[in-house]
Image (cartoon, rainbow, N blue to C red; front, side, top):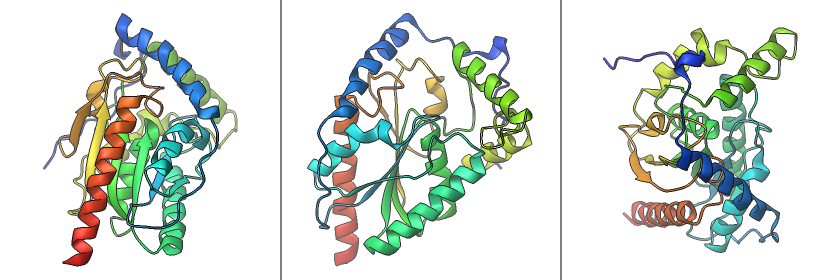
Length: 262
């Protein structure tokens, strides 16, 4: 049996302490994110390229991955937003919303999807792939704490604690403390430790220049690990990340085609 530890408590003595280089990378990442305001790229017509569903990070929204979506459309991939909104609520609720979206898209497109998730979106995407591998043929996560462990920078902890207080005061659509440090978080950590089904190709992209979460939490032993030099917030806009994602999708497309021909 795999030993599973609950996520680290969000106490000051457990804060992730990013390096000066990581903080500098985050500042550059905000500059790179200006690229999301570029010209829209039309949806390509269906062909051999695998379709892609993009899941944003915490309090981010689908628009945060617009630059990556445009890049993938130029490569021939049909891309779709997650419809999980700001990815702010209960983990299980977010997973169920994502799965309803995947079900709709698979029914419309007539084939399985690759799901790409950034940060918390990657964690939610992994849970979705574990629960419904019949809908998902590939998983790519970007700076995502997919090992079930959580250690964040001090300013992120403070943001979370503020949201916990809002939840306690009746704002039920924001995340609760239980989802991060309580029994719910422990259940999620246990589920994240389970292996993915055979046939779901899985890549975790991480960076030691991450200024938001401890990059060690991205090192899932079940995933193909790829290191880049991007800040956490710039994962969806960094050229190296876009190259890695495009390469993995090309490989998945070839694999799906080979399976269909067999």
